[in-house]
Length: 195
Image 1: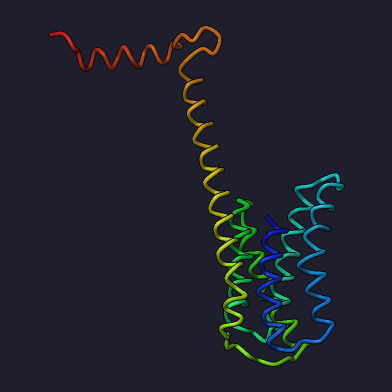
Image 2: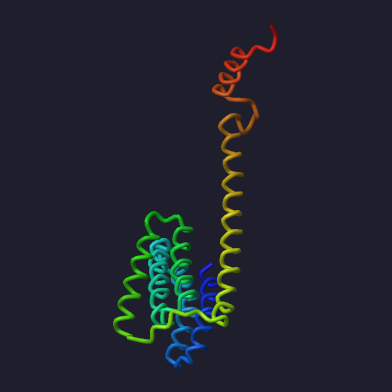
């Protein structure tokens, strides 16, 4: 998801950089932050002894990168809002407790620091060209996240049905367990079918 999301973000950011006639340094930072970083983050998670802790660090680095780009794009409204919004949304989707607000704070602090140090142009207007550059990020990212959420929900529902069955029946004999027999008997006595 990180590789796809950052690639789509790179297209949106590149549209702003083209319009701004940005220098080589910003293009190099785009290559490093949106193309190389996702692969490096995946590699680090794979080789470290504690992948969960490493991935939490990677998620915070994603937030730094998103925040870094907002001032570098001159606060261009649509891509700036999209980067921060999708960054926070991705953290919510991880289901790691409290990480989304930490990511938001990290992004906002990064925006303030980079804006203070960089002192670049303030150009919040979004042109049609930049809107077109943002469409892949909006359409593809939200579609992939939605399908992924649907897949996870389906898996949880399947597991819940299996757990329900296992809580009522013995897996080997397929006979109801004692608790299920008691529930069915009590229900039968409460609603007798024969009078």
